[in-house]
Amino acid sequence: MMSFNKNLLQFLKTAQSVRAQFLLHKLPSAIILQAYLGISDDEVIEEMLMDQRWQLVLDCLNCETPPFSKATLVRFRNRLIKKELDQRLIDRTVEIAKHSWWIWLISTQSSFRFFPVMGSW
Image (tube, rainbow, N blue to C red; front, side, top):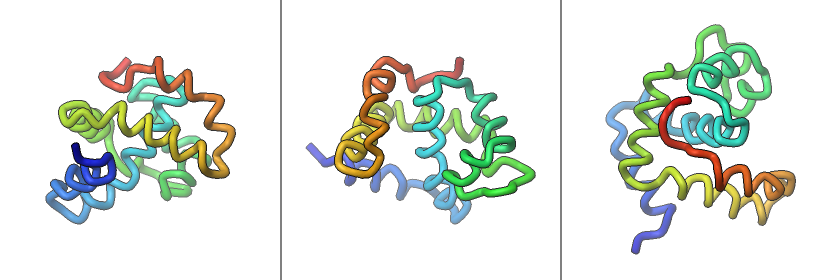
């Protein structure tokens, strides 16, 4: 069985444009934040525009338009699900958090486990 990193790398390499490669660094972060907060796809877009913490994480400080659309977020999540990488993304994030300064994230492990990554709410 291929490791998560190899699976994710292979998944990311399927992006066909520079813009897609650019977005693939932001979309997983948005998915993680969405799972953590338990918010809808529409709220993700709103947070990207209104919350500077989100903008900092997604490297789009003071953006006037979101770096990606709701449709892009949904397509990305659906591709993760199709490749069975959605829960792996969450699990790997929690695993990394256990070994990093993100110690606060460990306490949220249970909320990640029960949060449905797939579909919009």
